[in-house]
Length: 490
Image (cartoon, rainbow, N blue to C red):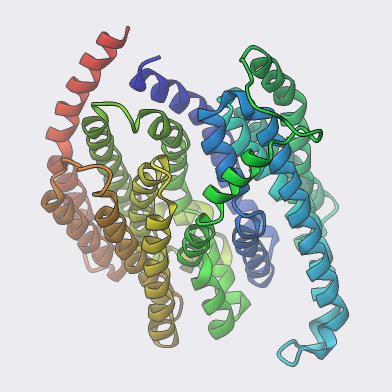
């Protein structure tokens, strides 16, 4: 199958998955902001971002290794599954041990309010189950994606979404148990989706492997020792990458929580829901692109292919960001209830950060296809350091807005570093000057929207049209190239 056909097929499948899952969950935002207090939403947000850090870190990024090795080593897919499950179970036991140790020593931690001790103990217990369910789900998504069973991933994602919505309605609207119900819904949704993916996909993987000539000795456990070592050799250096990525994604919430309180963090956390619209499209492309980059990185025309895809991706993300900045207040009026409405002003800088985060992910996939996880670790590490420093400088004075701006600057730094490192693998043929001009236009549009001068909507519209003009020629040229390639691949 040609590169474009392969990418297009996966984009179509992931579009179904992400639109059904992310959009439906997105539509739950008004529901959450109605039934949860800002304090409860702030606590829920911290639990979620902590999960994003610990799952890749404690599982040693074994899911990323499963994706990378699954695409290239069809004969080892059963062994890859066994290795992954082994590390998911180990990670869950580690988290359980730490959480129970914290429960026993909670009264000796001076910074914790004694009146909140029992509440924290309960959430630590729930976190054990939430971590185990999420770690398994995330591993299976990456594993079946690497095994090229995208249909299984799509079904699992849709099942997870349907279960989340059903249990949220039951626990939050029916039984009305607030934050506890929110967490129960997450645990049950991840568990149900994981069971479904294993039931559907594992047998299919075994059938595929049987049709391949398997060479090399396999141990009694069904896991090749050399396979496990090679997977860990690939995944361990990515801990720096995933941790630094998490810092860029989430550390601002911890600073806001500590410096401004849980209620302000709840408002700031809900501001991320509008950038999540742009992230739906980013995730669709990223999931498909990671598989395509792995397959195409050795091809003779890989440089042209990567350059064209970068142009498409960048222009789409910029225009998507510009459009959302244009209608941000309208969206906020629909999504955010009561005191959550003020979150709309934090959205524009967060939207801009999504662009640079997406481009960093694109460039990271090229590095990872060449098994160069160290470069991306450096790029994200530098971005994370910038984020921490700027949060410390900005939040005491500007509170949540300072956190949003710090996040945007740190992502820009990370993207520039990624561009520098990726040059050792691919020379991208891209007009970076024109891209920088478009970024400046976006910043101006965001500042005008946030400050709300008279007639700001007209100014914002003019700037969005300017972005369309900047990238119109690109779209025409790349469309012609893709159409001609698709005809040749038929």
